[in-house]
Image 1: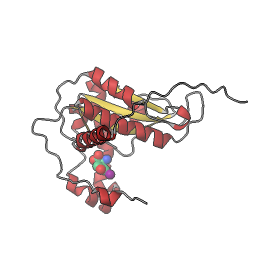
Image 2 (image 1 turned 30 degrees about the vertical axis):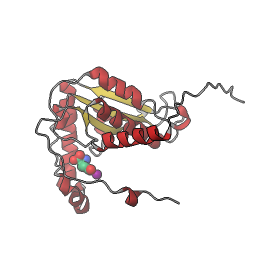
Image 3 (image 1 turned 90 degrees about the vertical axis):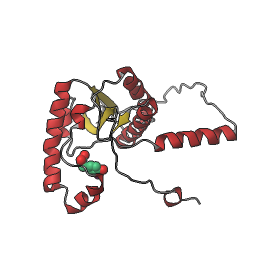
Image 4 (image 1 turned 60 degrees about the vertical axis):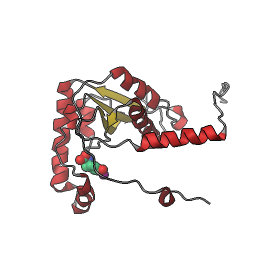
Length: 218
Ligand code: IYR
């Protein structure tokens, strides 16, 4: 059956080229300062800011507009502790050998290990779940791409608002669905601690690949 196509006028702003370049350069500068933070202060953060950023993430494009994501905002210290304990159990086996020598060697410069104090210290954890299908059985499309785009937008929004983040991927992540009591159609996709960095927070001294290396023009 033919669907009834409903349309409305696009809300689109057109800038002159100088303004376009300035906007592009300013966003590049702002986002290039975002870094993965592993040392969080336990200071409280304004949760309405986080909620606004989650609403921003949820404007991401998605396959057939199915919006196949659920964001779980965890602030309860008892739940954060359970997440930490379960994540550290997985990470101990990862760092204890499951990762393999090559992977551990690739991670060595980051100084990461199985201790995940940030899961308790950060005042909020946003756990992003991918809905593999609708709860009613509806088909979802391009779930990984859709949820990945939403996560990128969430990280940018939180940084823009003045909050530090980490993209943490304890592996495997199945325990998150259990601890957070998610329905069977949801799979944990990314765990994002959110907060302020400690005043003396250090980060690995890494660089980004130059544009010439990552951009191909034809
Ligand atoms: N999930 C582990 C290991 C880890 C893996 C990658 I790839 C990283 O870029 C960083 C860490 C951990 O969080 O320590």
